[in-house]
Image (cartoon, rainbow over all chains, first blue to last red; front, top):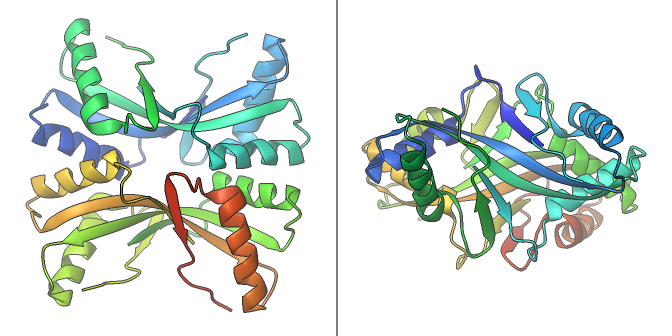
Length: 77
Length: 77
Length: 77
Length: 77
């Protein structure tokens, strides 16, 4: 799953990357936001249980929901 | 796009999260790997050009391809 | 220089590391906070100018001063 | 304590910040390397025990010593 800063929270490192793109001639890069990706391997093949567990981990362990959003990108079985 | 450590590169922080899951009673969490997510906004609606540009950015600017893999997760227009 | 989350901003990854320490038998670890370190090499040997430049970089480029504090840890010449 | 990539490991994000500094007119910034900082609070006032514990955490939990170096920056009591 992915954890990203909320849209209204300034991301200075993403901005730095956008500026660096410009110095390389890539003016088409309008904005860059940097987040975190967590690849989680579970000992279950039950998609519903997997999603419930990951949701709980996100809320309790992986994200600061005051400043960050999280999203389950993909569940593979 | 996402940047992740290659599978043979130890990820101590992912391991720490896996252990923390266990202390919370989530023994089903077998492994956690932590990576980086970059959300890139481009001034183009041409999917082919967008993908070419992002590929170039990944190789030249965003990933250390000796220890990291990268993947374009999704292109939205 | 170092960038750290402000004390009142929850740091879930630091918490996860603290929990992982406990699973390894290190109950003496009360709290862990994770921050970023930037090692900056400057083309100047003037300490005053160096410090002024780094302060400017911190405020403008490296830290989100709404949620983060920064500190110049050491200047070496 | 601080965890930094070994000098011979390319740091693309540090490079991006160096480039971004240049776009802001700060050509004096020769190089930037990005690392991690961990602030660890211990339930002990014994400096020797504290240092021994932190050394163990670094080697076992916080750093990938194949690609990273670590250093205890400061012990406060």
